[in-house]
Length: 96
Image (cartoon, rainbow, N blue to C red):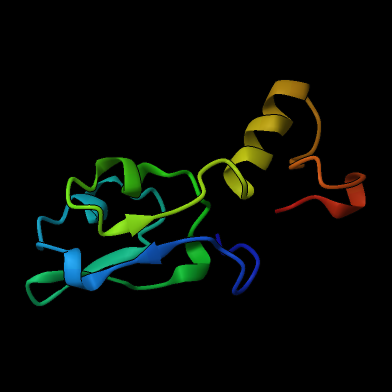
């Protein structure tokens, strides 16, 4: 599932990447792929800003503002029993 185009806070610092592939393993939406001996972003717009990649990168090659995007909207919807919303407005402004 793609989210909003060009709005993710995901940042990837290829110079810090050692090619361990952990980001590829933990990303639930295949945002990362191995490109030779290093990881690369395959589709930035697939990022739901869950933060799994950044939390699992031991080398500081990834930064993301976890909990600000669609991941938090989905969790909020599950908790409240309503539609996914990040709280940035009424139901018509749902983030997903």
